[in-house]
Length: 272
Image 1 (cartoon, rainbow, N blue to C red):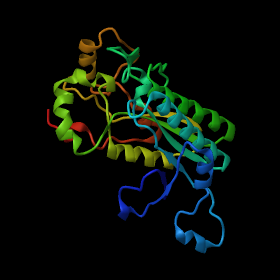
Image 2 (cartoon, one colour):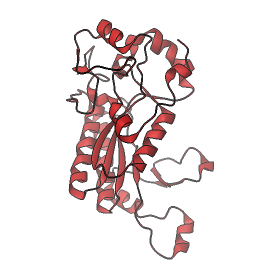
Image 3 (cartoon, rainbow, N blue to C red):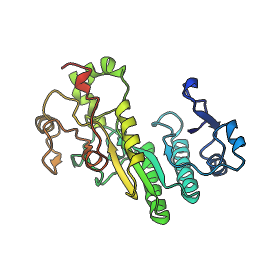
Image 4 (cartoon, rainbow, N blue to C red):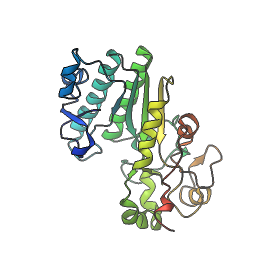
């Protein structure tokens, strides 16, 4: 495993080499993707081959970390450079991350509504913020190169990531004050289940360009999905019958196509 980053990999015992690399510089990206993964590579007697697969998760992770123009520049260029270099080097599997924010409410100005539920991959995404716009550009870049190079490029629209220690800290508010979760569509993805999704995406070949919502199965409310949405989003149309506790940001496609199984349901870690 070769990690391309501006900082070292956080776990020095993991055996992962970090090559310091500015992903917004295409020359550095091409070079890095044809680099040795460690000093032992010099003993093999030949230059290294391109990687078997690429995960691209590097980005400015939200708005208001840097000015908006830098968020756009950094996120769009890094995604373009990774996908272009990987495709031209013959990498057959590239997995990159988009975001729940493309559905248009997370970073909207004021209290806005979703067009319909469930939020699925064919939704007409229309955000008003720079971060989400940068992610839409990444999705279109993936589609363009997958069509041209006939490789598999899967885009994960990642929901609000929850780490194990955050259930006890955050879910009393998430569940007790559910309208605080509207911008996340009352949905989430456990970090460990996101790891499962990444593994499934590597294993599943031959799908070309795909977008997958990366979320857990269930809504983060006490009420059923139907009852909660009827009370709290009465003006938003429902386009199909939803599961009893189905997350409004639906993961149905990733369950049906990749075989995702929800292991870390929030109710295991926070008792209603």
